[in-house]
Image (cartoon, rainbow, N blue to C red; front, side, top):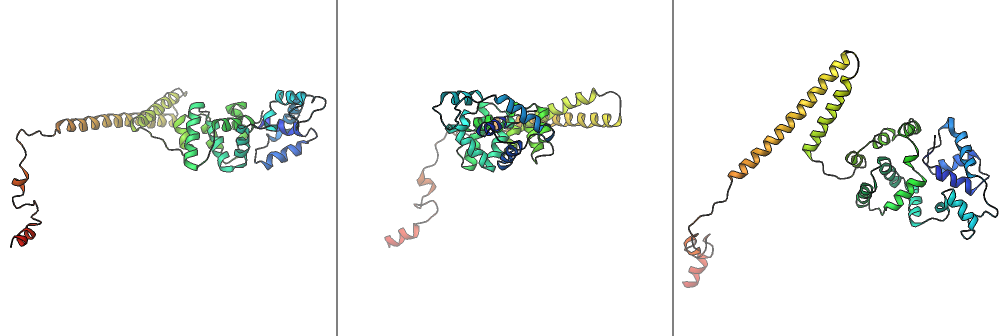
Length: 289
């Protein structure tokens, strides 16, 4: 099974061809990166080493003017770790920041796509005063947290029993935007009617799954009853919501502002003494005395 930081592991091996498995594991631990699965660790690191092949003559990863070296680094897909772009510099900074790293890895686990990922990044920046960019987050994903290298089941094996975020990450792998933003604690508007409709959909399709279970066990019958009740309650809630809205609109329709045909009384009619409230009358009399 591959590791989400596979390119980073390659970088460590290219940087120091003499690095032992223990050295690589120590570097991963120093950066707070989960180690490969223990029973697959040795074979996996050996497989990466084999894939590196032979470095070219005169190999010098500190010299970007040595063409064979540059080509080799590009072939191994680690060139930008040796000669970082702005995006990769940002990725290194994310790796060194526990708070940013937690949020970025959660965004990557949810696989929102460029548009919604950018929206999530903007919301994170506003909330925490960060300056994350889409390029930096993508670079972090490529080198340190490549979600696409592992299947859903492999992620389950990789994370289970080794991180407190197991449930959250596994949920994010299948989450839509709304659930992903909820886990990220990002503000969003949720329309009540759509929320009830979604609950009804979930209850109904779960009911269909339960109904296909063979037999008539007690737990199956109980589940059918509970789910049927949930479907009906959602239907009632949606119906009540619609009727309540119609009633409000009906009342609004009856409420109309009157447009009187006669002219309003003049200010002299309203305040014959010179002021509507009578204020100033005594002062006027005192002046005339």
